[in-house]
Amino acid sequence: MEIERLGENKIRCALSEEEIREMGYNIDEIIGNTEVTQEFMRAVVELVEEQGNISLQNISPVVKAELLQDHSMAITFGGDSEMSFKNLVDTVGQLMNQLAPEKISEFRQMNQEEKKSAIDDFLEKYKTRHSQGAKKTETEDANDTEQKEDNEIFETSVPFSLEFSSLDEVLRLIRLAPFTEKVPASSFYKFRQKYYLVMDLIHFSREELRPFAFTIVEYNSCRYAEPGQIAFIKEHGKCIVENEALQTLMQL
Image (cartoon, rainbow, N blue to C red; front, top):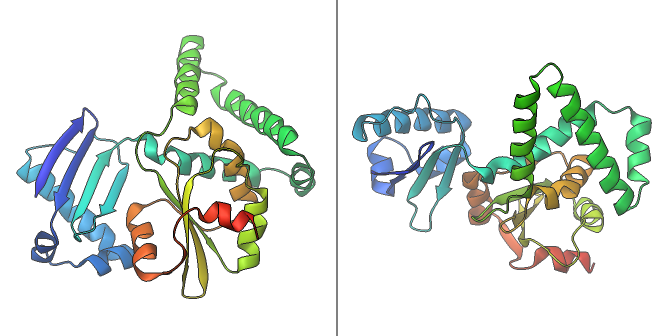
């Protein structure tokens, strides 16, 4: 197993398919069975700590697993901005759940500019409520950090996939997607009677994706951000549109 430290809070290891088999696992089980995935990850943590003489105790719990073309696997432990869009969607979902039905209905009737203004106001009130009681300097530092993260451009691949029960569901969300001149790379798959829109959000910032996060929360309840899950969809699903799926679906 190859182990590489990418930063103070980030470590990457790579295992070949043979090494994975020697550990008593196979790729399909790791991807398709949650219990096996957790067991495998615990075994990898032990190996990394043993072979690399590294303690992962103080490393951020964020984990990213990538299934490579040769069926080897790369696993990264540590904080990473690549997960921040999923975090944004989750946060938006929590906020939307707190809204009364009439407020959600009002939001859906707004145009894009009105929605953007409402989103900014909504999140600002959320941050204000959760920063009350903090020291002024700590609050200012936190706000500066958050603003920097919002504007930071994703420089590496940020895979994200949405699951749909029907083509009508796909088209309904696509028509509301706030993409015009700048559109994510995307492909479209079908697997076991479900449709999957797979996107790569590289070169976008959280700020640019915020309206899309609200659209996702409004009209979609099943999403994936783990590279292993998305690799499984691509490997086992039927590819309907390989490139520029968003642009193609927007024309329907």
